[in-house]
Image 1: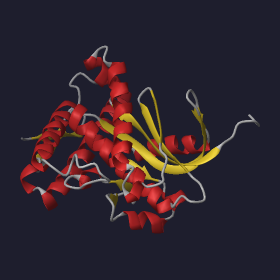
Image 2: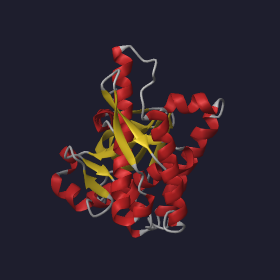
Image 3: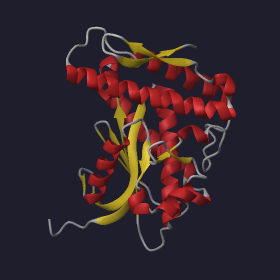
Image 4: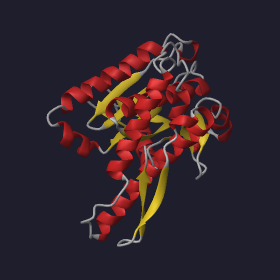
Length: 272
């Protein structure tokens, strides 16, 4: 281990929620899916890198199973604010693309720390920190490591599709890039109404699928797991509606929280 050269990186890490269920539906398309999304990551970086925000930054992209990482090597010339902002924008693009194209949600973090990476291996304190934060994220959101970056930088980023959540955690508000050009990526700048319609439909489908308890569920552990899942989709629904209330009121999704009497726990009812 003494011969291993660890380097400092800014790290964006996320994994796919509902990975097993997705592939149960998709059969043998696992490799195609993973390859498509590695290509997606490269495409995002390729499109955005010429912009001033991303100038002189070298991105490393890694994927393994249902996990993805995008890293920016830290050096004397690296501006911390610009590096974090670059990862925030890239994560927002990823989240929107996954939701719109695959009806998939992700959860993760943006942090900094030491790591070692080559073609086959990724490890280090930075990766462990990113994974720890991903677990803390709870909901389908990418959270920022305010302990490492400091409150001042995180507050400044609140002008750049970052918000403070109800639990006072900084997170990437990926809906906020709809209607914006990110670097030279104009994917969500044009056809806004089509994007909004697709995203709305996908959220409705997801909430209808995961927003209720299985009527056969009895084991306490499975009940708790289901309740956590419902809370994730309730969070997504509320964030989408908050965005719509400001910018696109006609796409707001009517819903109600209803009590499932057998378990005395809430479920989500949506109307389209």
